[in-house]
Image (cartoon, rainbow, N blue to C red; front, side, top):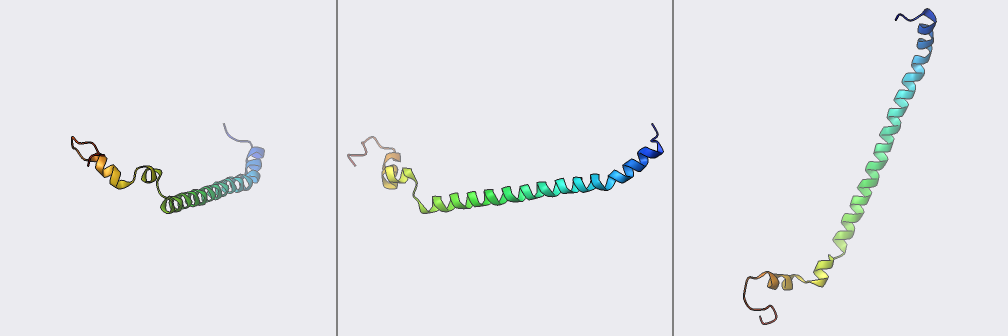
Length: 81
């Protein structure tokens, strides 16, 4: 269907507004992505630093030498060694 002369003029008047809104929406989503990226960067950095400073609960409950004794394949109990 061919547009009438009035429809074409209306479209030409609205086209800058449509493109502005489209560009603005893209810019808004870029900003949201940037904020989420920074948030996850800080969460990862904080979690990594915290895990580096604190010790793992398994190391407190079962120190590594005891784990090594338990992992040995022998028929004698660990307490007898």
